[in-house]
Image (cartoon, rainbow, N blue to C red; front, side, top):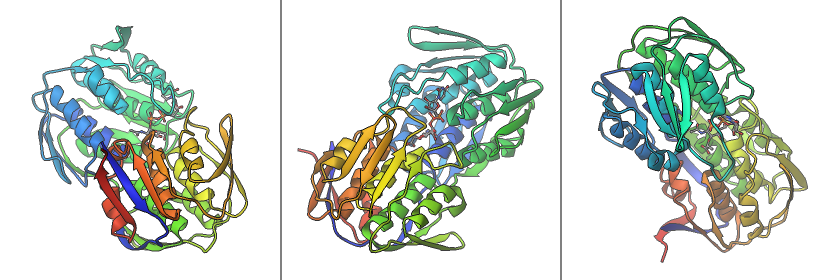
Amino acid sequence: MDKLIIKGGKKLAGDVTVSGSKNAALPIFISTILAPGMNEIQNVPFLRDINTTIKVLESLGAEIQGNGNIVRIDTSRLSGHEATYDLVKTMRASVLVLGPLLARFGKARVSLPGGCAIGARPINLHLKGLEALGADITLEHGYVEARARRLKGARINFDISTVGGTEQLLMAAVTAKGETVLENAAREPEIVDLADILTKMGARIEGAGTDTIRINGVSELQAVTHSVMPDRIEAGTFMTAAAITGGDIRIHNMRLDHLDALVFKLQDAGVEITHKDDVVRVKGPKRIKSINIKTRPYPGFPTDMQAQIMALMTIAEGASVISENIFENRFMHVSELLRFGADIIVEGNTATVKGVKKLSGAPVMATDLRASASLILAGLASDNTTEVSRIYHLDRGYEAIEKKLAGLGAEIKRVKED
Ligand code: EPZ
């Protein structure tokens, strides 16, 4: 296993380019199941989760060319309709094949994803929505068995805002008979990107990005070419890296409008953010001011930036109250941040962070994807050296982050863990 060695204290400076969005690319890859033929996906990030998604599609019979920036996916001759436990336990987003397989073949067998470090993350709303579209769903031996002659449009109202649930039902509904309305739908930009490729394929979708999405079923979809949107969480992580090191960086190929909630909070903390076209300049202040954070579904403050903003708050002036309202166990980075000398108290879903003058580097362990990023940020701001182990979590969602940070002047390198 690899680990990262970081010598902190450097102010970041220079230019960095954001890669394509992991959380847009995964459902976009899976949507090609609906469109037989050669689909070309561009601006693809080079990530472990992308490789896992490629394995899932190949296990269904897709032919895939390339695994770098451009990936061609031929779904003309799909033979399977099963996503097995070993693939789904590696990446829970594999469950998104359920809807497209049901829509195209009328049957699917997908492993239940099981638990995850940050929470139980059930898929009950996915299954309830598919049943509303006329699917027969049974659960046995840890698998979802789904059958449907032809899915029929329905009104579906989500009890809670679910990104995956909205994506699942959007993909299931595009070739269902009649109209489907998704109420209390998630509004994340990644859903808009998925709706964009589905529309290019021939789907009829209105309202993606709002909380009510209307879909009129069509009989078939065509294979297309599509470029994945920039990764807003990677961009937000680099913005926070500039803030925590008092640096001054320019970030290329990002959509600032995808990060309003984060931008307003960073500006409240004293960070200067300006932009021209798709280049965003981020300048950290001498001392960060503390701010309070509540994670919320989009356009609220993103839960995927909670660990990173907490790292920033550990050196802010004053106290910050951070509440995590999306997942029930997303504070695992706290015990590792305490090893840097941070002052954090957790009560239920709320963490109170009292800013300290300086963090001191320490050996720490990554526990999940975004927790890994927060430990790197703390390491960048610490004096002396930090070692972050178990960074396979990191490689799921950040493309060569140590190279990108080194390009901004950070002293960071990846070494083999002995
Ligand atoms: C997506 O996960 C993202 N992953 C997550 O990013 C992100 O944190 C999350 O959305 C919230 O924004 C991908 O897009 C691949 P949800 P998803 O369904 O779809 C509950 C990262 O770091 N829920 O919006 O699984 C669920 O337990 C990852 O990149 C149900 O109860 O999230 C959670 O508490 C982490 N029943 C809440 O809803 C369901 O059927 C939001 O989950 C579905 C969800």
